[in-house]
Length: 491
Image (tube, rainbow, N blue to C red):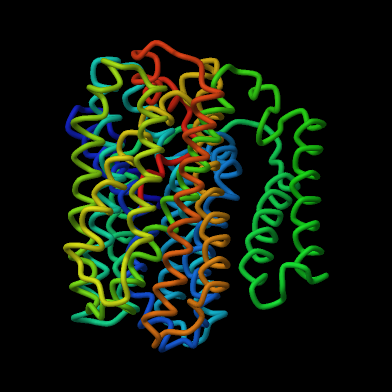
């Protein structure tokens, strides 16, 4: 005889317990982007990654995550959010086990891609569940969304520090294994605390999901491979053209389908395009900075894994505090546009400062002040640009707007890191062991990232219209309706 289903979250305690699992999902999704950073040098040695291809440990996750977010949101609507939430954790655990057991490069990248697929299923279903639980309770919704949003910088902070602790005192596979017990706990508790939710009839745009993910992967692959094959080589341009053709096919598919992953008409909403450009260029600058700063600390300054993770804590703690405490107050006082512009310019200034790092430098002079300035810039720009993007769409398309802006962030992350990896390799950062050559390459990458951040600031200055502060500050609440993606805040 079948056992009765566990009682669904209905009381206040169950509702807030469900929110704890939802916030945990956000925490893990963001932690998985940052926890591998400190472990990269040891993974490179053990698995045989080249300096240029090392970025694929990050990109394999981000390409799968960003490319499939819109599909994850659609599946959440069709299959039911709780069902997809559980399925995502199963896939994430399987990917984590694969990545931890990997003994070769291809196996590691397969595991990371599976983790990204799991994250793309978890993130939109988590937001849908949050809105199901709190959407009819306006007084509680703001608090619930604030706790959910705070999980992102907390995950970034914990990932950097835990990655150092685990790599130093256990071994790098445990940065992946840590997800498995968490997944088992979440899967055990989900039926008891999450609302069941009902799916609905509709079609799944698999062709759109395949073309946008393949197009992004092709573009990243071409840029990463370009230093080896040459920017003028036929291989580089053929793969780039293939990526562009696939993205074009995605747009064509969206324009013809009755139920597309992304309704193209949404781009006519004021400020949506400008806010997404800001998010894309912000991620394209921020993620390479974090990636190469990890390598500079270990491969040039000679810090161990634990010391390197600890060295990045001031920056990530500053981000968490400023995003939660300071940024909302500044948005209310000055509005979103000035903060986005000033924040991206400050981020660019911090990157430029990092480009002055020396082969014989030290943390207090060459890293700490520049990293804190970068953190200030990121903290000022992220929340108002995200809120502007979410508040720009019609209320019934808040979920789609959320999916688009978070996809922009993940696409920017992947393409920015691929481009800066190519720049670093072209300027000497090909093999570890030569501090001068490595520093020259990393400095070039920091300069490239600074240019992207400044370009984002200029784009925001020219494209964003002045909007009421309350709209942008509250856009995260309203825009999360239906939830199509995570708030991918920091690495």
